[in-house]
Length: 327
Length: 273
Image 1 (cartoon, rainbow over the protein chains, first blue to last red):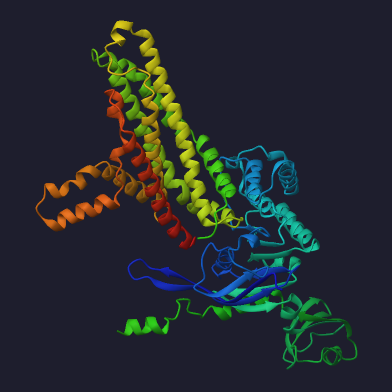
Image 2 (image 1 turned 45 degrees about the vertical axis):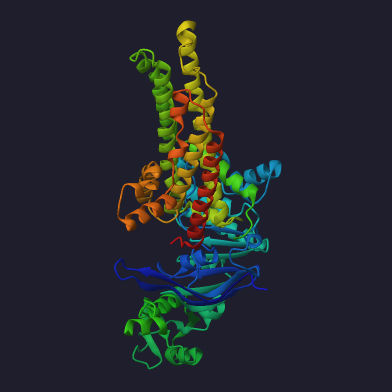
């Protein structure tokens, strides 16, 4: 049973004051996240990442499609006991201390007495806020609030953790801590679904990713599948050449001088790199290395986002609506 | 409607209570009300023979007025502030329903109001007791009712019931509109609610039947808050009819239930963009 499953999930918002039009924020998202996966949900700003998370948390309702978490329908209270959610740029009650906020949230899960107190203290220590536990949240910095947010996400020891831009507002140390936290959750067998537009985080943490742009799922799979499937070419380093290899060679894209007699050749992916290297090295040259130039996650991301950029996000009218307009 | 968990509602209510008692504005309002109640002691001196009536009237009016301030201005923010500041996102992901959240908000504010009304009523009773203690026995004998008439507690209870209705109105509006509009609508309804008897009898003073029907319709739809005001009975030492009292409390219960049902219906369908 998948930990998270969505089937043709779509969400339209109404935009415009006088004549509201449907704006498609999410367009037919179908994906499945297996238990124990760290799943990166990637996309540029406005791609539909937060909308997806809000749909899964039932903060907004789908226009069409279905979704389930841990095999249960969205909004199911038993399911909610087993998940944790960190909203994007979270905000909590100013008048409460970090300890009081976590105690309140823990009580909503039914934790009482010393179990609750131990749980709250442990989590505050874990996110580095043990010393500030009695400080009102109004005095917290953005990064500290993000840490409180992470602590409240984990208050019930959730099986599935949803993190919406968890690195947002954090300094490099904070980001390192969050990465370590996600890896700890992975090692404990938890499922982590996190949205981000920071690709390096996804590369470090995720077992699988999905790229969304303009509300549509553009690609999904393991990083290895998505990235190595796209061989961009070969980098051949040659040394001891009396002159630069010919850039006009049909298998060569470009030649860069590294040092006198030492050159980097950017060869096309269709070429046999060894044969080309031997040909270019001639009798005096020496082959130093041949490296596969792979598509990076960034390349894939940019390509998919560019591909989606022509999409019209204003939802196509339904036949009934179109008929109504025609009348 | 799914089953409502009472412990969850109470936990949310306790948090609303905590939020309210840490609000400095609330303290200012209650302090100001207590000062006015104390000041009624001096104002009463200006009216020979009417001192106790003035103190009671001013004191109970202050309790009602400042109670309304609290009910409206905290009530309108209970839901809309959570939505505006997005604190509702993390909250609704917890094992609770939107119905429980709304009921918790309502009971939390009603609990806050109960404490405030109790504090203000206690202040009034102290002022009246002090005044009675300072007044010679022969003068006290001429008063229509004793200074520390237990009926003051009944008035306070009815004020609290009215404030619970006002809180439910404020919460209803706060589920679908901005705090400013919610405040305007709530104040409007509370003012209109004071004229329930006039709407009921409107058909006796107009000839147009449609207007009379409209007035009758409004009478049934708008809150009828006039019966909650029994200050005059206590001020003039008149008895409070038990039957009317029971009917008013029943009316409050029914009206609050209808308002909260409407609020829950709207709130459960709402998208938090």
